[in-house]
Image 1: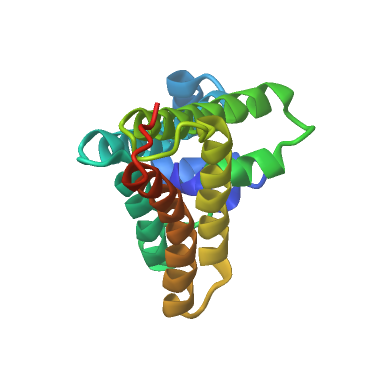
Image 2: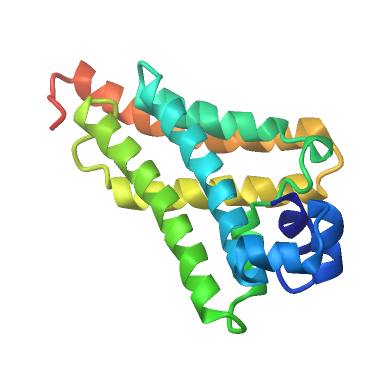
Amino acid sequence: MTLFWLKGYNATSLKDLEEALKMRPGSIYAAFQSKEALFLAALELYAGRMRTELAATIANAPSTLTALRTYLVSLGGLDRCDKPSTACMLVKSLLEIQTDHPALRRVVVDHLNTILTLLEDGFAKARAAGELPPDADPARLAKRMQTYVFGLKIQAQRETDPLALQLLAQDLADEISAHRQTATALHHQGLSPA
């Protein structure tokens, strides 16, 4: 996963895989059948970790909206030293394999859609709990937040000032909080959220 995340699918050679896995070519193909299958397994590992982290953040929080906001703020602390890349492996892969590998592209898009569905479910849960106004659109909010998440991960690749990244994450998280203020205002006006 680390190798593909760092170098990408096309630039990762069999020699790179041999060194990373400490395996001979025959053993690699016996274990994984192909470079593509190994890449798909690496993508699943990466996406699975992302799904698990996001789902746990939402499930374990007393407030879903606060959990989503906290997740964004946490991305302001991304450090290039603790990962091979702060940029999202899914986004990097999508950009790399746009037309060359349509089957791989479909898998990447499916992973991105799964993350989007988790976010949408989180916003729907927040709306049902009265944290968002009744007319809030969970699908639209989820797309916005997914854009924020991936944008922050890309920004972390180029940002040399940690404070600037933290402030950017805070600004984006504040936009999530602004939706809560709308819901709170409705509550104070005696209007019941759906």
